[in-house]
Amino acid sequence: PSPFELTMKTAVILASLFAGASAFGMLPSTNTRSATALQLMIPEADMDEKQLEIKKVVDTWRTARLLTREEADAQLEGEWLEAYNRFHEKYDADMELMLEIKEKVARMIEPPVVAKKGNKQRKRDKFAKSQAREAAAAANAQ
Image (cartoon, rainbow, N blue to C red):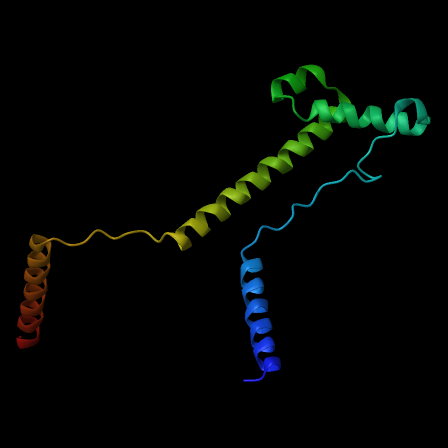
């Protein structure tokens, strides 16, 4: 073999070793979550009246939606109580739907297990089958 062929074979072997080793290497971690302009809040000092009003509504709803039904009946009035009730009716309906879907999917994933028949049950079934066959034969003979 010429020196060129030897060098090429060595280069190919080393390249394949490096490629194989890098396949199992750790990837550098990247920051997957960064604050964008949409995620940041404007300081209250820089907000205009409309933005302050929206922030007030958002804060009110943030606290209102976490109340229990009794607390909501006692603390909320008018439009806020209606919004609370609409939200929780939709939430309850969605939860019921998800529970139904979960039950259907669970049956597909884990079908019901039928208990194995024991020897005594097999003998009883065989006897019942033979009795039915004899009754059918007697009915046909008449």
